[in-house]
Each structure stands twice: as structure tokens, then as C-alpha cells.
Picture 1: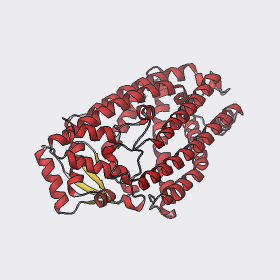
Picture 2 (picture 1 turned 180 degrees about the horizontal axis):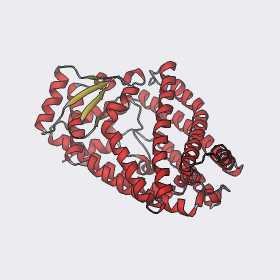
Picture 3 (picture 1 turned 90 degrees about the horizontal axis):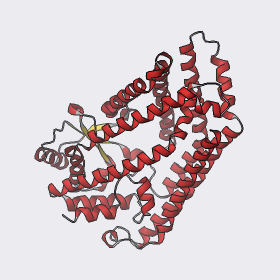
Picture 4 (picture 1 turned 60 degrees about the vertical axis):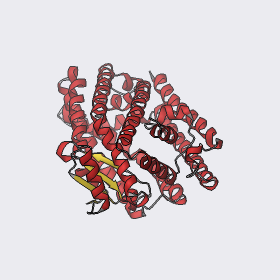
Length: 412
């Protein structure tokens, strides 16, 4: 089992590097005619430099992360950490509280170590690469506060979830997979429902969109589409980045549109309306509901397999640890990698299909050309790769390529 764990880790690293290398070979391909107006020779050269710097950065980061994990396995780092935690929490009289404390400490310590390992890379990526190419707007203060807030939020959520799943496992191990799945899925749906109200305000300000041409255009689109819309908000994303975006969040009466202020700066009213028509297209085709159902089914499979891993103590035994819920759970995701890869390929293929359907809806709304110019602007401004390798697209793209989307939007 130890060799299987190591093999999967190495395989995942090798697959990622191979796909990245194939993608890099497409840097010299000519830009397709339909998007040549946004990728001048100078812009293309800048985009290629950005992609190459990003690939080198990812190669170094992934190499360091993979090497750190392999060294922790081969040198007994995980076993030593597990022994220390057992020593610290072994005196707790309640077996359940002891198990919860051990799991929380195990994941907390590894999270902190991972955060410290990645911190220099995060700093360089933000204030080096993104700064050099004109994307970063984050100040050191905001960067530091984001890290502290993210870590605090991660500790809180992880502890709550671990307390729930460990309690279920200790009391009803035979039904752990089903009950834990129900609890975690319920929590995920709750967070999705209240994401914009609970999580976003910790990092960004959201202000109602002012009355005017844009708000009227969005309301008119919603009325024509028979789309119930309660709130339209603008988020101050420009304090961190120049990257533009927009999204729908919540369900039912809590549904709201959130526009990045950078999107409003970069696109015209007609183009923003076209982008939102695309999002309404997702709603009309029930893509969110379908995605939730697929996610629930795949996560049920994951929890079932996790239950088997815990039952037979597969990962902890391979690492020389005592039967530990937290060790088995931590390394289960390594064993799950092949299945996750297959499911992600199917999920990406389904997502790309949904994107085409949502784009088709913009054609019905008569804003296809505005959608095209919006996509071209967003792609050019973010220096997206106009000629990605088909294999890289197949494995990693949840959206069709820019050229494929334009061709679809321009043809019946």
C-alpha cells in the first residue's frame, strides 16, 4: 500500500508536468483569425511570456510540494506527527473527544506547515509575477489580512466538520459514509446559499448597483427572461486585482448578481448585459441544479470509499501508524486520485456542454455579438492562452476555448 500511495503521488505530478509541457509547445502557434484583433504581435509576445513564467513557477511549486510530501512519507514525518498527537491527546478521558482533538490537531498542524511552505511562493506570485504583468493591486497589509482571515476561517470550518464526522464515525461506523455525506453535503449547500452574505463580507465590500443605465439594462433583461432578480451588487475586487468577473449566488429569494467593479470598468453596458444573459442561460437550463445533483452523487461515492478505507485502516497501516481516523482520512484523497481524475474529466466535459448551452441562450436574447466582444476583452485583458493544447483543455478546462465559443456564438 505504501508503494501505491507513493506511485499515485508521483503519477499525479508527472501527469501535471506532461500536460503543462504539451501546452507550452503551443506557444508558437499562430493566433486564430477571429481573435487576432485582441492579440497583436506585442500582446501575443506578452501573453507568451506570462504563460511561460507561470508554467515555470507552477513547476517549481509543484516540485517542492511533491518532494515535501514524499520526504514526510519516506522519513516517517507523518508517523512522528501522529505519535506526538497521540501523546498529547491520549490522556483525554472521553474517547470521542480524544479522537476529535487528534483529528483537529493533525489537520491544523499540517495546514500550518503547508501554509508556511507555500508562503514564499504566494508572496512571489502576488508581488512578483502578477505585479510585473500589471494584475496585482493588493497591498502587503491586505495580503497579510487575507492570509490570516483565510487561515482562521479554514480552522473554524475544518474543526466543525471534523467534529461532526468523527462523532458519526465513533458512534455509527457502519453508516458513517452515508451520515457523514449527508452532514457535509448539507453544510456545503448552506454555505453556497449564504456565501455572499457570510463569507464575501470578510474579504470584500459589496454595494448595491447604483440606479442608471446598467441597472436598468439588467432589470430589462431579467424581465424579458422571466428571471426573478432581487439584488444586484458591485464588489470592490479592484483592491486586489485587475481581473474581471461576475457571478450569481444563492437560491430562491436570496438569489443575487455580483459584479466585480473591474468588470464594470472594462466592459460596456451591452457587454455586461450579455455576460449576465449567459448566466441566466445557466439558470434556464437548470445547470446549477444539475451540477448540485452530480456533486452530491460523486461525493456519496467518495464517502462510501472513504468508509472502506477507514474500516480496513489502509493508509495508516501503510505509513506505520496506529489505526487513526485522521491519517486514513488525510491520505484517502491520494488513493482517490485516479477516480477523482476520471470524474473531473467527465465533470469538465459536462461543464463545457453547459457553457455552450448558456451561450446559445445569449443568441436567443439577441446579444451574441456583445457576448463575443465581452469574451474577447476579458480574455485579452487577462492574457489568457489563445492556443491551448487539446489535451490540456480536455483535462483542465471547465469552459470551451475562446475560439470554440466564438464559433458557436456566430453559427446557428
